[in-house]
Length: 448
Image (cartoon, rainbow, N blue to C red; front, side, top):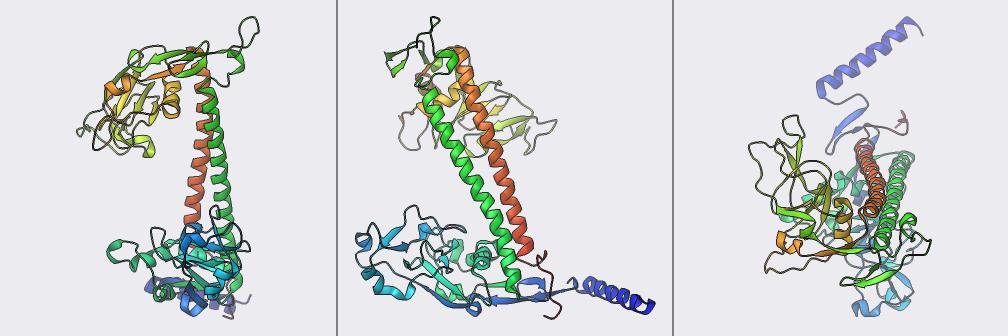
């Protein structure tokens, strides 16, 4: 390269950087009504990129005209976030379909829920429902695929970019409904090249596929754990090391006040095996959202989310190897606690004093016990109510073995849930980068 050309290139780069510094817009990008986007992208509304926007209706007779087989009839519950849920899809006859055939589904139609609690949820039609129809709660958007690929539109609508626009149309922050005019007005930054649109949609779709795979795996593992709990906590299945008598004969069963149980199991009352008490007030003089040297002990509240974690404190009231039980609202959910902690807000604590393993008992409480509601108004539990309940249990050694198996299953599920959460975060980051053009998957065409 000659010195003149090199100087010209350096000068061009310098001017581009200077322009970006002055305007805040990087070289190769432009400022638009939807923000900074690549120079070769356009801002388009759904109206400008679509050949159809409309919805169907509920057939005369409602659910009474549904049949066991026929044309798929898509309702709002069938439209998920980026995927169809056909587990409870309805069907209609050709005759019913003919009364509103103008909204017959085609394979790549974009489906958007426009009323009710699921407003804004969007997915794409496919071969399974092609030729079917929709009710009045589902909007069909049929794009001009030379301008906008359907897969990309689904990602755009489901992103924060699309959902924020949908929210802006809802009076008072309530998601009540979208009309066709509002749907047509939704606008997005779109790559001019459909090749780039497809690349973006495919990249996001690949992450969606991984998310779906993880969700199914977690559901499978949870189902296995549930079945395992039902077998081991009732004694219907015994671990090999506890299944036989010393002479090799199989152990049998006996009748008890809780029904049939293994012959070597016993019935235990909670207040004879645990000290039971309720949590107190929040320790406001020693409170932190994060664990610190000054506040190393978790505070657990009467809640399910995040296992009831409220914060951290310098005080410890309850011992490790204890159980907590939610005692107001959602009743009777048990958690095993393996470190010192501080309980608050009606949370019940069970500290072991007898022959019951805390970890085993926490599983048994969640699986086997139905708590009676004795008070009117907001349901709640008291320590005396919990204390007079019974569970069946084997020897401490067998309790520990059962709890270890279930705990290992929990750890496996928790690891998968953490991986799922991380993958969802990655998807959000990818959407922010790819749907705004900050990261490009296809090299810009200088001729555009």
